[in-house]
Length: 446
Image (cartoon, rainbow, N blue to C red):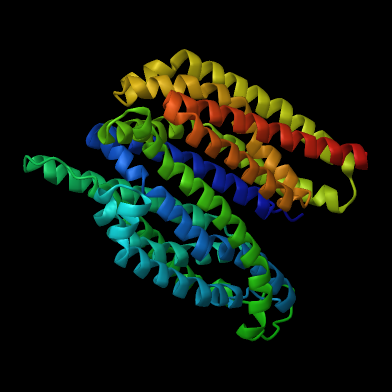
């Protein structure tokens, strides 16, 4: 009797889960290394680049990766062989957009640094960073193809390679500087980020080139003619543009939030160095530490989405309710346990790992958001499975506006503590809104 093969979704999820945990572990120790190497102010400068990177990815790649993944699955089923058309169509749009974005960031680095980020020292870093934008776009489109054909191992391997390349580059450059008696520059971290994107892009392209099975007919299926590329654009854009618009709106709000925190801290009374240091400790040390256990809930979310979608499509609302109740129970329990751990060990972690008592204070305070933070990740996945992506977008925008209100009104008066309050209120509000949405759905359908 022929052995039953593993389900590709489960196998892919396991691969992504393990890779995600390993990648986050590398990133976690990398953050510790950066914080000790470049100090709190250097971390603040580095973190200021995140809004530019996030917006660039949202504009040029994020929506197209998801659209390619969906389209390639549909085309493969229809044509009887793995279709390369969706990836080619996506690249023909994403790559030119990314090159334009690359040129805009490179040529406008001084304006972006001085007027938007309000920190002229980030201009050289932006020029280095700009070259990672086209690489990231190509990498995202190729990953979308592999997700669509259920070959999660390639994106997982490229993710690990990116992290290893990034860390290795920074380690070598900083080591050389130290051997010459020079202080390492934070520019090395930006160069490492760009090199990481280059390596992952080249690996993904090599996988496409060497993966001869990408053009073979599927077993038991007739080999149909591949559809003309032009016919793919309407479907691709119909999926990609709404996703891109949502990501851009959220990215813009998050960018305003990120850039405004140091500026508002200066209004509180800090000088520029202190404001950047506080911002660097918060976003570059404390937040990644708090988000580390979220790798587990993110994996649960990946598993939940297809389960909820399938049961919803079959009209099995009882199964949806059971999955929701279990999610709330176990993710809530995990959040409470993590909260207790951060409250007990937060100050020790800040001092011993990051050599920053301020990081310890942030970790201890942020521990209170863990039950809501981890639960919100999985509740969002359930709502997506129920076809409520529009509701999720509206609720996320509303909660981002709450955080922005605290940034502009509370931070100048109470310092970074005012933002911590805003973060707690917004996460609590988001969790309540998610639960209200789910409760209404379950009451209506069960």
